[in-house]
Length: 432
Image (cartoon, rainbow, N blue to C red):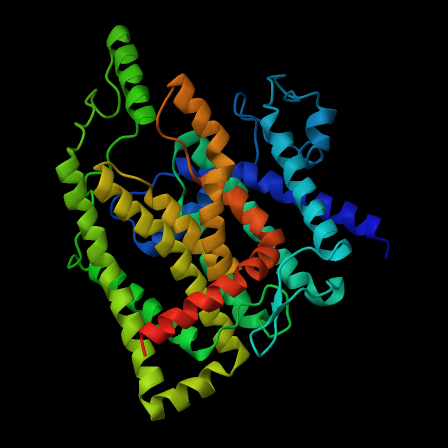
């Protein structure tokens, strides 16, 4: 079939996805969960909140007919107004739909027409750039488009509310691990198959993460900032404004007109040490698993056989990507907070890169984290010059860097390969 037909199809598909993302962006942060909600109850309430009620006018509550709800076209046909009450419909909705459709079409062109996209690796570990074939390599394209859609939703929410819903991040991680267990094979673009040594680190770190989560759930592992993290300046300003407005109108706001006092630098450093404790089981078990499967001959043989299955090495490669993606952000958060006495990065960014790493792998997630500041540099300089505020949502820039790496990580990895090989040789020599 001609490429043009595929481009039109994927634009339409992306626009439909963008329509759903509009629902996610508006409803997900506003779904209320009770303090005693179980995990299953949390999941059901989230699904129900996203699916009910059907699309409707926020002013007159009239359900929107299917023919008025077509992405982009419906808004244009209605002239940007509700058919029933003529209330204006925000232009944000068709813009998100059009952008999402354009992204889907753009990545189709880059992958399947220009062969610019993720690398494939041989069984010897060498990275090559394959020629993309739609009939063969469509799973990695769809997985990456799922990632793009999730990042777009997370970025829009973060830009507006300075939060990144964990539901988005953990859905990304679970989908990434499941898909890579199915599709990851040598010579397949975007595959995350790893060698036995890297697989050992992933397995040990993954088990350690589960241990930490269970200990935290049982109350053995302490929670950092149990009353909530220090307020961002934008949040504090908004709460002050809301309290002043409430006082003028003779009413009280939901938090009883009380703004939480700020943490002292000493209190912030004390709380962040609890997160260092949370990281201990994953780090220790990763080292123990690696030592056991490399130093004990019988275990090494069994482990090598197990990792020889593509689905095992693909799954563990995804787990390693999730762990590394989250770790580089978390360690930056911890060290920055200890150094400056104020929270350096939000835990939402940690969750976000956990999901990103599970889909694009450890190397690409690390590169995305280190190039993300360049995407936010212009805005940061503007904020510094104008003095408007000191915090900025980092999720959108992590997302932009990830989208960049989907196309160009192969070239970046090839450029860095000699230096990384030398570093690994040096570390190997130091470690005997």
